[in-house]
Each structure stands twice: as C-alpha cells, then as structure tokens.
Length: 290
Length: 304
Image (cartoon, rainbow over all chains, first blue to last red; front, side, top):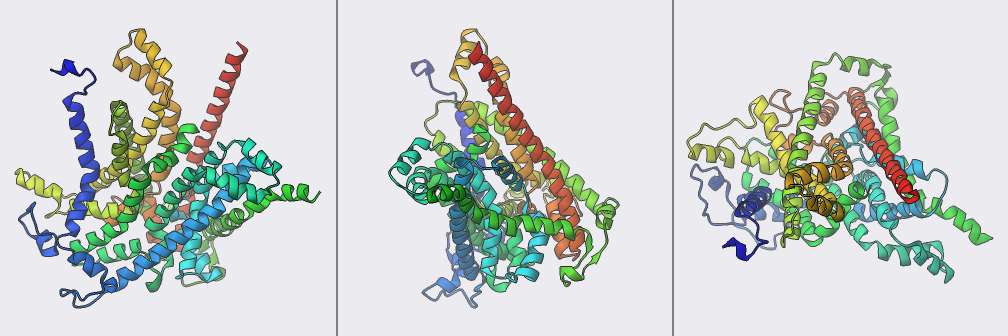
C-alpha cells in the first residue's frame, strides 16, 4: 500500500529517472566497452553483449609508455603518446597562467573603483562570445608571420590563455564580490600591503571559485581542436588534433580510436566526479545571480 | 604619501597582465581579422604582400551560394537546437524539482556530456550512427526495420547533429533552470497552494514567470554557444553530405585551410562576429533593464 509512505514518488517518476541516466551515461559507457574490444570483434555482424575485454587498444595507443613488449604490436606509432604529453603540458600551463592573471584582474575590477570599470566588464562579456573559428585566420597569421611561435607549445598556451581569460575574469568577479570588504580592511589595518591582502586574505576565501574556474579553463585547453590544428606542427600536436587526423583514415580501427577518445575523456570525467558542486556553481554563477 | 600613490596604481598593476594578454592575443587578432577581411590574401603570402580589395570579399559573399547555404544551416541549427533544448531542459527541471536523495549524483551524471571533449562526443555519436555496426541501426535491424542513413542523407544528417547537440547541451539548460527553481521564494508557492491553485496553475502562472529572467539569459548563453559548435559536426559529418550540415564555423575553417582564401574567411568571421555581437548586446541590455527594474521595485516597496 502506497499510503503507508505518503511521500513516495510514483513508479513512472523512477522510470523517467532511470531512462535519463541511461541516456546521459549510455553513450559514454558504449565508448568505454568499445575501447575494450578488438576491431574484428566490433565489425563482426553478431552483436554479442558478452565479450572478452582486452586492453590491447590502449597498449597500441600508448605503446611508447609501455615498459614491457606487447606481443601484438609490430610497429609502435608514437604520435598519440607524444600528443598526450603535449596536451598535458599545454592544458596545465595555460590553466595556471589564466588563473593567476585572471584572478588578479577580477580582483582589481571588483575592489578598486577607477575609471572605466564598467567598460572593462562590458568588454569582458563581449569577449566571451568570440568563437574560436573567428580567431582562426588572425591567430594563424600573427602567430606564424609576426610572433614566429607557430608550431610551439608556447604559442598554443598564449592562444588558450587569451581565449579563457574573459570567462575566468567573469566567473571570479562574482566570487570576489562576495568576500566581505571588512576582512580586507582589517588586514590593511594590521599593515598588509595590497598584494599581501590579495594573496593571503582574498585568495583563500575564493577557493571554490578558483576550483570552478580552473576546471573550466583546463577543459577548454584540453579539449580545444580548431586553433590547435591551425598552429600545431607534427611535434606539437595535441590529442584532439591527432584523433581527428586518425579518423580521416580509410580503414578506421574503431577499437583504438575509442581508446584514444576514452583517454581524452578521462580527466574531465574525473574532475566532474571530484568537483561537480564547484562546476555547477561556476555554471550557474553568471546566469542565475545575474 | 608613497602608500597613497601605490594604492592609486595598484589596480592598474593587478590589471596589467590580463590587459596585456588580451590586447596582444585577442584584441589585436580581431583587429587583424577586420583588416584581413579587406584583402585578397592566401596563406603563402605575408599580410603585407596581400592585395587590398576593399569591400569585395563582403559583397561577393552575398552572391556565394555556398556561404548563403551555410548561413541558413547555421541559423536553422541554432534555432532548432535552442528551442528543443529549452523545452526539454526546462520541462525536466520542473519534473525533477523534488526532494530527492540522489539529486547530487544525478546532476553529476548529467553534466558529464558537457565536460568531455566535443571531439569525443562526435566520435561516440559517429560510432552509434555507424551504418552497419552502430547501435541504432543494429537495434532497428533486430526489430525488423529498415536501417536509417543517419549520416549519409542530407536531412537525416542534419537531424543527427541536432540529436547529438541536444544530448550534449540539454543538461546545461536543465541545471540552470533547476538552480532558478530552487532559489525561488517558497512563500509565493505556499501562498498559491493555500489559495487552491493546481500543480499546473502553479507551474504556469508562478514558477515560469519567476524563472523567466534566468531562462532568457540561459537561452541567450546557449544561443551564443551554439554558434561556436564545430568539433562535433566536424567529426560526425565534416559538413556533408553536400553542404547540409556545414555551419559557419566549419565554412570559415574550410575556406581558410582548403580553399586558402584567408581574406574571404576573415570576412565571414566578421559577419559571424557581428551577429554574435548583436545577440550579446541584447543580453547585456536585457540584464541591465532587469537590474534597474528590480532596483526600482525595491525602492518602491521600501517607500511604501
């Protein structure tokens, strides 16, 4: 009898929940299981739910990191391993730089009243909308003809820092404006300089905002394809670029491609599970509070 | 005295690195793009060698059937995607706004599609849309239906990229609307319930109007972002078959890299940028008006 527990939801509600979960996680699970199958197995006509999982695809993709000799690899293609390292460097360095520079700027925008504050906020917001495709031509031209940093990781880092800064400033602004100014005044009374106030008082208080901002920045830098594709040469390719290059091949090895896709997806998935609360705060900060 | 001066310069000191980077790597490129859009320029030349052609690139684009088609595809993709995602996202938020123990887990699972790389999203869907081994056609076949040419037929391909985008971004709308619902004043809902309003009436006359400011900002954010979609479509269809899924971003990147006409690509980028600028301005004006109105209301209620 459902009257015993009056607050119980109807079965249809739970069915909807289950359907939604299956829909949102299903494709990711499918990619994961595919990455554990051999290509012959994937391409065979009989679709069996039960198969022997194998890590061979991961071994093929990561062959230059293996400390043992994998029997099935005749020739080790080092492209992916190198790209993985490039991606890690680019994403970490640009996240670090964006955050440092971004929170200083956000702090100045919130705390110091000086001419042009509104204009700066407005520009920040306008910059947020610039699609990477629009930057494609000029970034290619400037980076290769004027700065001479095309094909270097530094060039990629510069592009990603610039791309992410407006968003980071925007998000951090809303966090910093919640820090009570009395705390800072107290610190200043005790003789702290502006930089001390910023690093020792403000920064520790906006940790959730920093977490959200860094995850968003890392995600963009880690996932970005278009500018990476335009700037990178053979040695500085990032993972998304290698994946797109590999799927244009005629004989597509779905197992290996899915394994590389899975490796690209793992860090964002981990972040999501560790810090979903901060991500959601970051997502809603702009829209819900205004 | 010195501290006073230091204080006066501190804001600029804090802003300087960001301003420098934005100037060098964002403002300057955009200015450069505007300049390049007046040139006949191919990637083997430096920009100084390119010939100045005035407004020719801009004018020619309007008689370029491929550009017009891709503009149409972009606009219809954006419109379809935003409408479907708003309806689904808001609907789900209204349905799931209950006291539920696993809500945190649920939200975590829902944001996964947004967090993983668009390239990977494209890969997953391309595999699922695969004509023979993809899960959709396999299921259709085992149920005795004809397989569907998901990516090889123009209108199906358009539907396919829309489905993939809806899968990826509906959670965004859902999460923002849920946040709006949960920050709603409970007193208004209580009052309506006491006055005998039904669930539908509460949703229609109280919840939705109260959510409206957030919903409009959300829709505009999503609108801006949907102009940026590129990777998923690139991996799924690469704009094809024909030009049926070639959105502007893709057209720009192809004009630059395949047709090697940087000036034309820059002119296209400029059109896209102007379009987005108008939308952003609309959003900014809207939030300003809203702020002013709530401020006025608050002042009025304080006076009363």
